[in-house]
Image (cartoon, rainbow, N blue to C red; front, side):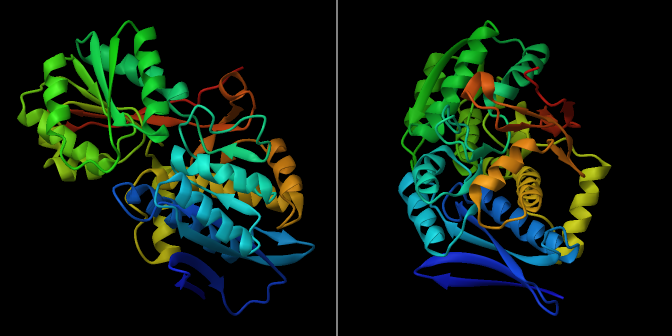
Length: 390
C-alpha cells in the first residue's frame, strides 16, 4: 500500500512518497525545484503531480531494480518561487540532501539559477525552460524535456494564418528571461512567415495591465501572442483586450494553461478566437494514463497539460537510472540517457534533437497538439507529429 506525505523543512515544501510493506535495498531521490506559489504555480503543481505518480508507478510495478533489488523512489520537491535565486536555493537544499537526479524546473529564470548548482554538485537534470540556452555543450548532464517555440511555433503559426487574416502581431510577455527568450523566438518565427511582429514587455508581478492594453490597442495589431505570460496574467490581458474591443485571434505560443486563462478571463466566450501549443494530443492512450493516475493516486491528474510532459520526462529518467544501474552516479545516468530511444508507453515515440538550436542533441521531441477555440467554442486538438532534425 502506498502512502503519500508532505513535510516542511526550513520553510520549504518537500513532497515525498514511500512504499511500505516491501523491503527495498536502495533509494532514488528525484529532486525538483518547482514553482508552487504565485501566478505560475499551476505549472509547478503539474510537475509535482507527475513526479508523485511516476514514483508510485515505478515502485508498484518494480520498474527500478538495481543489482536484483527493487528501489524506493522519493520525490523531493521544493518551491523555486519561479526565480533564479529561488531555484538556486532549492537546488542547494537538494544537494544537501544528497540528491543527484533532478526533474524540473519549469521556467527559464529557474533553469538559469539551477544549472550552475547542478554542475557544481554533479547532478543530472531534465529541465523545461524555453530559454535560448536552456541546454548546451557546457552542461553535458542537462537534458531538455521537449522542444520550445523553435520547434513548434512554426506549425501553429501556419495553422493560424490558414484560419485568420492578419499580417501584424503584438507579442506580450514578462520582461525577464522567462519572457524575453520565448517572445523573441516567437517574433523571429512570425517574421519568417511574413508577419510583422512587435514585442511588448511588462514587469513580472504586474497587476495593472491597463497601460499595456492601451499601447496594444494603439498599435492596432491583427493578432496578439501571449507567449509565456503566466496563465493568471494572460487571463487578465485577454479579458481587458476583449473589453477594449480587440477582435483578432490570440496566440499562446509559450506553454499550456488555457483552462486557467479562460477561467480568469471569464470563460471561453471571452477568449473567442484562441490558438495555442498543447503538450500532447489527447487520445485513448493518454486517457488510459489519466485513468491510471486516478487508480494509483486516488484523485484526478493535475489540470495543467504539462503533467503529461513531466510524466514522459520522469519515466525517461527512471529508464536511464535503470540502464545505468546506479542511483547516484550522474555521469553514468546521463550516458545511459543519451543511448535511450525517446519513447513513452502512453505519449508515443519521438526523437532526440537540439543540435541545430542548442549545439547539443539532448532535447526530447515527441508528438504535440495545436489547441483551438473558435467563436468561443473549443475544437478538437490538431495532432502534430514530433519535430525531427534528420
